[in-house]
Length: 126
Image (cartoon, rainbow, N blue to C red; front, side, top):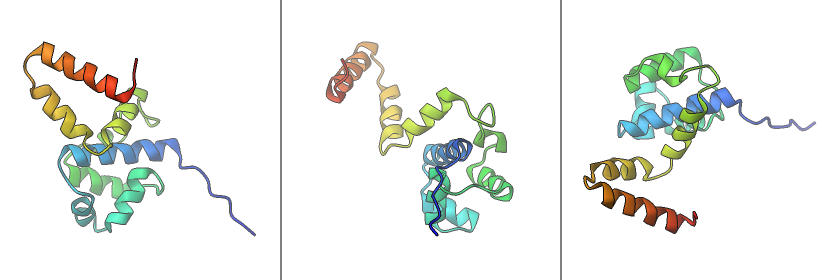
């Protein structure tokens, strides 16, 4: 008998994405967060992907380790805000937060617009 693998619940994916976003925003590695939670970094990876559900007690520990209210791990509603979910997904890409931090430090608006246009061109956006 084979067991069919279910897709992760969207709420679990949203919570995991927010954990990852907050961890990265604080410059914290998965290993460092795992240490604070008493887990392996592989378990943190599974939480961040939504592959494993985060228990209530682990949500409390994660909120403490990330120094945020528990509500921040859920967003504005249990199913998550679509805009925040999209941002969380985008921000988890390697280098995305670093790029945003550097971008906002660029003072001349014209230079920022040029960089944005260059980035769009490189990405193939028309």
